[in-house]
Image (cartoon, rainbow, N blue to C red; front, side, top):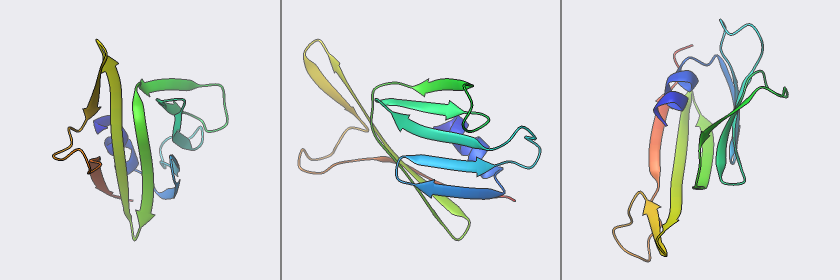
Length: 109
């Protein structure tokens, strides 16, 4: 999450929709950067549309990006089964409430 926040903060233009965000950093001359959720993994693609992909995280249950007035909100939830027990991060306070790790990023550019 920290790496995504650091990079998104530097973005000049952002297109955020659901589990995918594409953004442009002025000094990254090779093109846009894309983060997306694919088969439970957060994938970083640079430049967008290329074969240059990195897996940033596994066992991701939910990832959502939204953008409004220069602020990007990232909502994330991870889930893993260990020794037959399901572990959810962040840990919900109540079984009936879905919790998310939420970061709000104000764009600098």
